Image 1 (cartoon, rainbow, N blue to C red):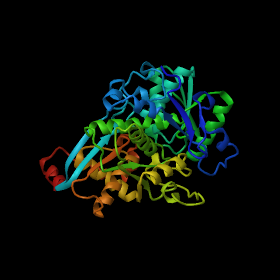
Image 2 (image 1 turned 60 degrees about the horizontal axis):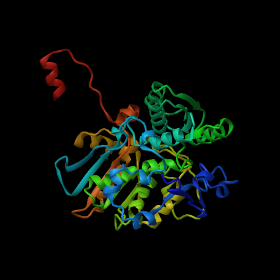
Image 3 (image 1 turned 90 degrees about the horizontal axis):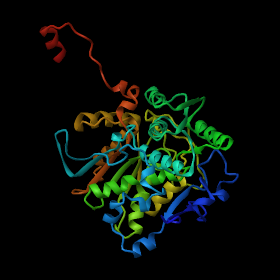
Length: 412
């Protein structure tokens, strides 16, 4: 293996570091950075694109080795013995009775081992920790990243410590406990749990999986882009709708396509649309602003409820560099989209994932999707993760006696 197949580059100052020189943030930019602002010094992994391109590497070559040349780990053997990725990709011809004038695809990442997109990041982080000799991995989470890390660590015989805000959904907390992880409920918000986990990392020397803080989370999440390109039969879609909280998932989608662009495998980037909840829009609302302004988040989509988006700077750069778009959707629109998605496609997504579908519906209603376009909606988590959220939009019938007459009344 080439020990120098990648290095880190700081998103903010551009300084580069060898893999051995830093694990998390740029030491210069993160020093004395204010805690009430998005972190400075988030790192991006840069591979030997020029050398690889000069050697004539093709997408088929990358696939043959399961993209190891573009992953920050030494061996595929260190990945968990679970099927992470290679999730279903559905072509949707109609929505209800409406014939679509474009190609709609749904990428269902709820079919990962712990039922969320976050397994892509956890798998890479776990493998890297294994290679570096770490036995304990810690993360802050509103639920999905925590249950993901817990499940992956269970498969890898590693110890997981998950710090969660006390308001996290019980289904996700139960899942974490079932995987045998140590759960630490924290009084306060996700951001409080995030900061506390970093203090614990420094105190105990654990390996930290926190989104954006650990640059390998983006590297794990970018694998979805390789899959999308393959499932689109080596074609680039026109639009991809992505739910956004901290900004790591959308940065991962950008990073995967950027890798292919730098290798000359693709000639252009798709238009990637960031979708945030109206009541948790701290990332998209601050794009292009000189001063970052934080507003308290309060949305039914707990997985994307974030006051301080940890990957703001990188996400903003990607969106600005590659002509990305963004929009917000209300909680009502999210819940309606969740119901429509389930009823019309048979896919039950949690509110955070349904936000992406709500964004698609909003664009469609505004006639912003040209005829014959190809559109992908990224569904990042199962609806079974948060049944409480959708309780307000379903009407559970009362029980009846096993009588045909009562059945007729119920059916009418």
